[in-house]
Length: 63
Image (cartoon, rainbow, N blue to C red; front, side):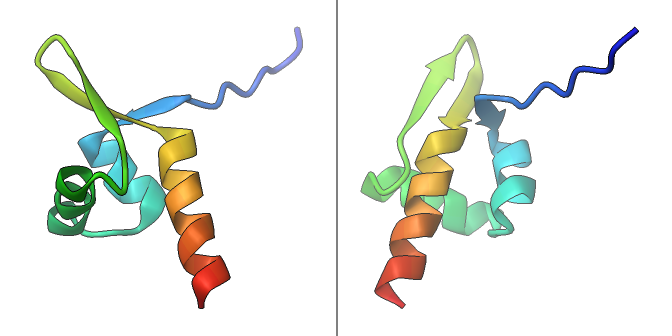
């Protein structure tokens, strides 16, 4: 059998915090300000991995 590594395309807020290395309050600030887009699935708030990657890339380029 082959081992397949599956990469998520979206994260819960808790997983986005771990992935980005940012605090919970900072993630919520970024969602509120529109710097990181999020969406609701049922009762769960989700964030696309590409939204986090794009935000981090933008910050790194500006540094």
